Amino acid sequence: MPATIATLTFCGRPLRAVEWLGTGPSAPRCPIVTTLNLHALGSEPSVWPPLLWSGLVYLFAYILLPPRTADTFDFVCLLALVAVGLPALLSGRNEAPMQREQINDVLQIFLANMAYLWVTRIFIALAKQAEADRERARLMQTLVNTDSLTGVLSRKRLLEEAEEALRALQPGRVLSFALFDLDNFKEINDRYGHPTGDVVLVHCAKKRARHGLRDRDRLGRLGGEEFGVLLPDTELSAARRLAKRLRASLEAPANEGPDVTASFGVMQARPGWTLSRLLTEADRALYQAKRSGKNRVVTRKDGPDAARDPVQKV
Image (cartoon, rainbow, N blue to C red):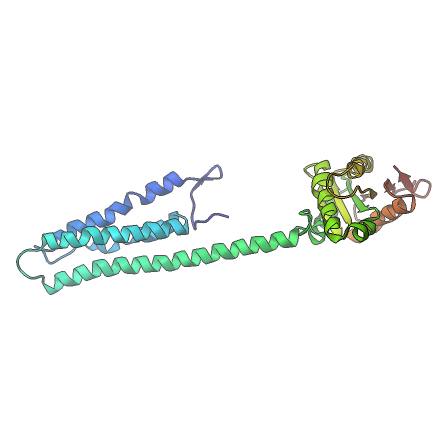
């Protein structure tokens, strides 16, 4: 999320040089014009009207620069105006005292710049608050979409993506879903404690399962030691091969915590399926894998041959 209200970009990159070129020449212009006008006030009771608008440089800085940079930029501009303006006023005065119109012009110059500066500071404060609100919103969205322990997708987000994929599934397209559960995980918690169990979950999710997936695959934690993998554009045979690789990866000896194994249930969805049906079918395959001895992959077939060959074990 950009930190500026209007950031010039080219090919997705902010043009900081262009932004500074836009505000840089305006910065010295403000005190220079002020110097010339205040110096002249000693002989002419008038001021160049555009000078009263030169404080717009503060607003331009706010528009083009990040809030904190604009804040510093504007404050330096005001200090420069005072630093050169007051000596110019003193050097430009003649022996006669200043007239009321001259005093009024001087006050307008400095008060106008103060007003521009404080209005800009209000805008900057609002921009900072808006940026903080966006950051909090991003953090909240991350917490909602990410499992806090393992860092994979949360149950809510995984199921949302699965439901979206099912709605978009058209004839001729395929979608598979793998459900896997760590075997005997309760015994790990009972024997080694829950902290060790958490280490095992993180290790399996981040270092084993996630690294065995393709970029388009979506891994999420459904709860406890149960995980789901959404496999877009993947036929059942390819999903079964991927599940076999994951099962072998999870079974490999671990350097962190006790060794574990996992059981997999894999199902290929059909157009018109609901999320409930997809989860039910995958859960049935997983249950069959558990009953068949665990540490295996079971796929369920759906179609004319389902009754004859309902389950395949790997």
